[in-house]
Image 1 (cartoon, rainbow, N blue to C red):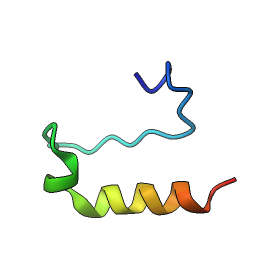
Image 2: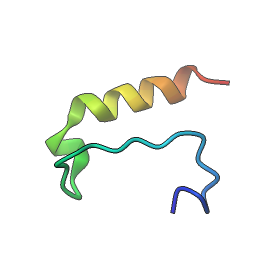
Image 3: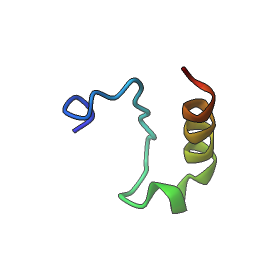
Length: 39
C-alpha cells in the first residue's frame, strides 16, 4: 500500500496491532511530526 501511495517513509512498529494509534501513540506522533516538518 505504501508503494502505491508513493510514500516517502514507512515505519514498522514491532508488536503493533491494526490500531497503532492506540497501541503505540508515540510512534504515530513522531511520524506525524516528521511529515509536518518535511519538504
